[in-house]
Length: 467
Image (cartoon, rainbow, N blue to C red; front, side):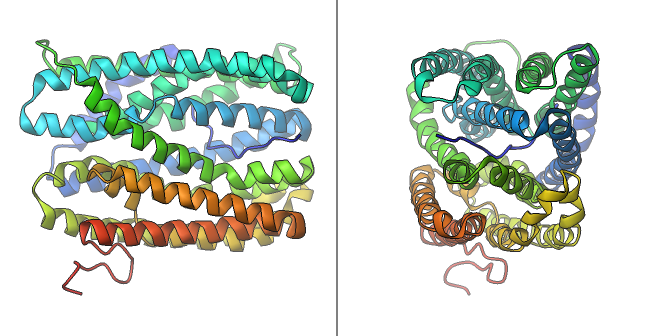
């Protein structure tokens, strides 16, 4: 049985440097986010986009170096383990890393400081406990199922689960920072500090004589993850303490959990959907094919990051506008479609122009994936054409139906991969992925229109009943 996964971007300076950078980031954030509401969201999206652009460059360079240092076989093991940990670590938050973005602005707007203190404290404790339990169960599961797993995966996976609690806590801290519009605090540790640290620690270990294999890379990742998350925890906690005075605390855990659970399902389906194509390639084709497809997907990172940058900037503003301001919500939502589509289209054209020389950096055999880019780019642009619909649904209380849309899309994607990959190989995976993205975009846009009366489509962004 083969396994594979697409990396969700490397993310990462030693702990001491991260702690020194935190006060500076706080001062920059305080200056940047003092204007009107829409300008705040726009600046946050711009900062997020800039960080993701830099992160894309860092991630691409680091992946090329790691592949050349380790060779395709060991690199493939590391990619599978690390990406699995990133995905499971994110899901181990059980939706709290997103639900806090909904509740914190609401509590702040309504002056519910006791509830605000409660969700800040309870979310951190819950995520840390839940992710630690999941890590333990994961290690036990790998050990129990080791007879059915290739032996070269067993030890790396057991080592990898050590990262889970810190990955989950880092994602929650990112949500807490986003809820307060602290863009640099939210995104820099995950997308800049951690990937740089992984690369630095890996280079130092190789210089010290460690073998250039997957285990060495996982040890470097463990060290980088703990240094980054602990530094982020101290920085975010200090800033929250300065902004939120000590006082009584109210915990509505049942309510928060019931809202977070559908969000968890949305995030689960989204992450599986994002990685399903490479997982299916790993199940049906040889490791060489997996490597080519993975490298091809990596070149699309620049296009994907536009969508994620806008999503990071607007989710908190969606949450504020949903409380009795339907007209402002509609106008702002329509505007965010343009923020997503036009930069994505520009980046897509850039990736198509530079895709072949970028793939050559991985090795000459990787250029076989260049024709696939044209299909994959089509799907990414189709998703960008409807804007961050799932954030709008989630922040407006429609997370259940959003989870249903993602479940249908995931089933559609997996079904197409099962049908097409055995006959068309990598082309089958690319066709399935592109069609699934078009289906996802169409279903989400239609759902937003039916539930909120807002048309989120780049050339038809009008209020229902006025178009």
